Image (cartoon, rainbow, N blue to C red):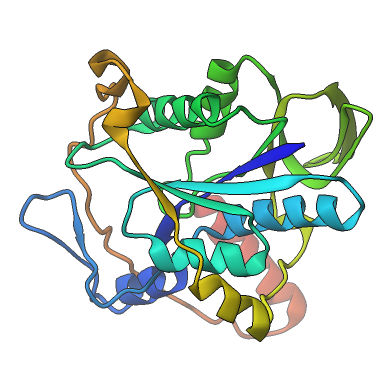
Length: 262
């Protein structure tokens, strides 16, 4: 069984929030790109949990080979972290100077998966922490022509069937489907594991496979952006706090009046 986990390198969300709150997050002269030289980059948290889901399937006795793929050849450190966690293959697709929107990213991932032997199970994080869209996995599933389910907090595979426990606002929901399938993983899966020192040392010797975008044979129209970023800006963050004093009943009444007025 081949499991492909799609991952993305993002800016550290905590650092971005801290810079924004402190007024230190700036947008470049193009009006689209944040100035982020001092902000570290790391694996998207939901994608890390997708890797954890794959590793748990292996721990449960599923005979599988885990491939981790990302777009961007500069994410070597992130891919080696994935190797240290237990990935058997680490792949970086080099986009060159192209700017890819969600549809193009899905097309690129689809071309790689199909051209590298396919996948019985594709795992993705529920969304990326930088844009919070969660669009790519659904577009990818459509292109693969496979079953898809989202917000997984538990995944089990047996006899060609995948069983997924979904975390919904109404409680857990269990769904089943035939492989191949694509599943997005949510943070309700639980904390991902840390690689051992021995695994980190071994991962240093593992060289990611770099795939040129042109080698995937995609037509130009499949890479053309359908959604174009026009402008990005940092909103003004302003906080005000007012304390109400007095007897509990008076404070409750005053608070209710403020809420109604607002």
